Length: 288
Length: 166
Image (spheres, rainbow over the protein chains, first blue to last red):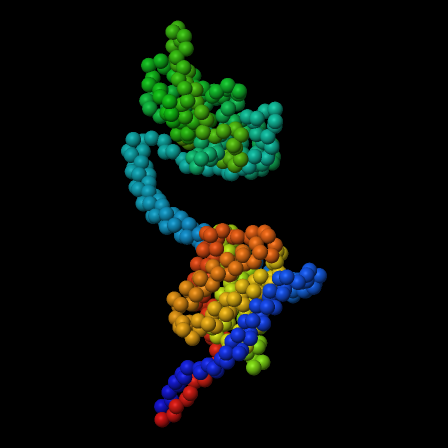
């Protein structure tokens, strides 16, 4: 047995001419009367009642609108996240390649070190600490929340990260059980042997307090340019070699009788921006 | 009959939610969307005039209760629209999307103009939303028309499928 559903269009009832005129006339007249009659009190009462009755619908409508606006924002964020995810995946693949290359270089370095009978460089080890206190009168000295109980020792090098780059922040000058005091690069009592990006010249970087940080004893014939990177020297007894300290801001050739030029440096790690610090704990003499 | 009345009430409540929601949403873009009118037109295309005129009148009156300037202008303009739709119902195929959209677009413009004229006439104050706002609202109304018409047809039309057995 085959069953076929067949839709038959609904036949509309014939509309009488009388009702086709009657209804519009009644409602047009009624609405016209509503407009001209003084119904302020009645309208206000009904309006109050309707407002009370229709509050849930209004809430639903506004909730839906809010949700709809949120959906737009969420979708946009989702798309952006997707793009970021793709970019990060590419970066991750790139990093994998770099790690592989680095491993090859490290192996080659170890082999050459062995051949040349050089002392191998040890990897840095240390602990992260946070700024616990900062004296208003001594802006270039900070107290960190780690001390001797955490393995921190005096004269340990301290690094920090700024703009995604790690750089020298200072040195531990006092150690208590739970806290330590760090002297930052800008402090006028701070000094470190440094080397410049171009050339083999070494100098002594000293903090300036309110004055710029500068490098002393750079020979006059040394080619120093603005923007050159400044690294800790291998001759430093306290700091591991190759830590970025800052960038050359200015080169001063003072009086003609001077035998060295003075180089002003912008430290990578600004005193005011220091928040988290890495204290190198396992570096000792001969381990660079 | 009771079931149909229930569906009608549900549709009316849904229309109010759509009206407030979309009016709020598109008001950020300066468009005066009138979803209640779209529902009213859809009711006219589906219901007989004995039910259609009172319902459309109530839709307009409902908006009037939430208006501030003149009471009854929406009821009047909606009734005018009902007259137009009932006059055109036999001539235009409202089953197709394009006539639905064009009719709603034009009716939105007509309602906007009638309301403005009534306001100027009775209250001597202008509430002209602006040509772009009115046109934008009419376009949005027109775009939503197929959905609303489909919903009204689905909920209210009485179709009696005949089962033929062979």
